[in-house]
Length: 421
Image 1: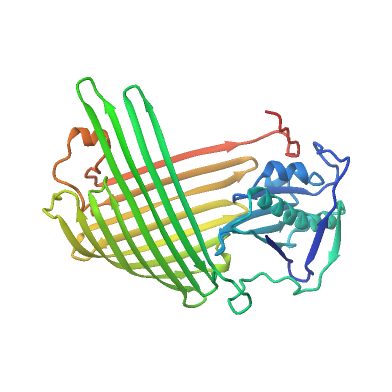
Image 2: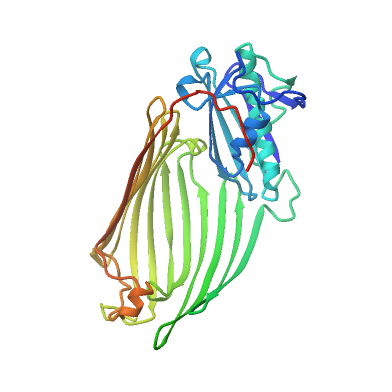
């Protein structure tokens, strides 16, 4: 595990060696302590532990009551771990005093190591702001010369890595279930390999699921056997500051989409409006894909095909934002087969979580697709296959939408943690 601290303009980096706090219990409100509004997304975001261990600040449940807003985001690293970015945004008298701290975990770290590492770095940032508001902090601060810690990917010239930055993962599982008139067996397995540097990104994924279900009816037994597997390879090259060039290949099979074999390959080009370094907090990208697809069908399609090869292109626009006002994700994509422009698909969707006013959050999510590209549809689908959802049926569209709100009121403090039950 590696952690670094990048302070705001005009400030030196600080390494903080935390001292145990003996005899200090978490209190409902620490008079004069720093008031913190905290948001965290990632596998190490154990807010219960953070509130329990860091009890020398006041955790508040509404941003309007805070002196400091902390937003934690994460993204995967080439070594199979996570890179956490902690954005400290000063409010009230701390407005304009912003910092960025980072934590990089290894793929072999257990969850306790990740949570403890994130807690340590969070404490580093909170200590500085706690001192700025005159509340102090139960830590010893040791000044470190600027540049003593750098936050970058090392290259193969700087280390002796026998794996050459490759990371592998294998998983497998067997599921068995049954009752008097129903039995089910399934096996799943997968293999991942990846290599990530500042210039290149290689990913290979393979996985499959084999399932057999037996359902006894009054006069017969239905046997449903399915197999779905997929392999995908991706290569990406950092072409320029805002441009990426890549290539993708995929081989798959799926019972539900009538495909004995599906082979696809082609180049892709991506443009990022904002620098890639800002992607944990905000991202706006445009991606274009051009590829060729070969289909080998299990059954003859409604177009009289048992196999075919087609060219297809796709354009996607995606927006991600996680800001003090809330978070939003939205994307729109359109694709079509080049042999027939009438065979197309248009999809759009996203979600929004927006702070309307004190304690009131609006949450909206939705997705809609206009479908005209179901080349795989088989001619005859039995009632049995429809009930078992064994085959996809013809559809011109699909959609789902959800909306809700949450409203909190009462005490502004969120310090107390009760771990009973």
